[in-house]
Length: 205
Image (cartoon, rainbow, N blue to C red; front, side, top):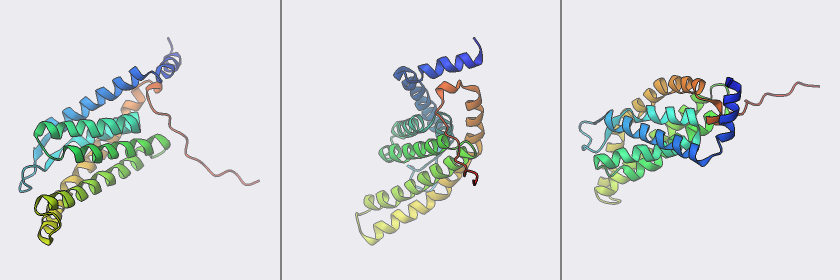
């Protein structure tokens, strides 16, 4: 069977829920393993903040397989890692990392040129901003609802974790983008999201 025939066959099978569920399950497990085993608590941030390599896995998943797989694997895989650590961040991680994977995959699947780069930037903004707001508001609530001291505690915690979150997404782009490109070249096109060509202005009559 030629490569063209194989791609056509896989493309026809792409609509099968079994194929989609299988890919998603594999990437959820991938994100979980990377996040859980390649992580370490951040000193002086209460023991619940963790620096990990999970964003690399989230970007690999989303930039390779698109927004649905990226969003589910990013959110569920990362949240499972937090839950395994006994962290109260798990529900917030489900939303933040899920949004990160979805946005990165959505943008990357719509652009032929520099799609991975634009997707990485948008996903990174969602992750950094999402955790900054989570830390600011949630930690503030833990320390006393809406008091000025609670707000100050939340802001201090958020600012303390901010540099680590930035480092995580930068590493996610440096490693995740080239790995995703290699995977896209190796995986049958039928298993990959369609990537619409970038619109170009029409020639003047």
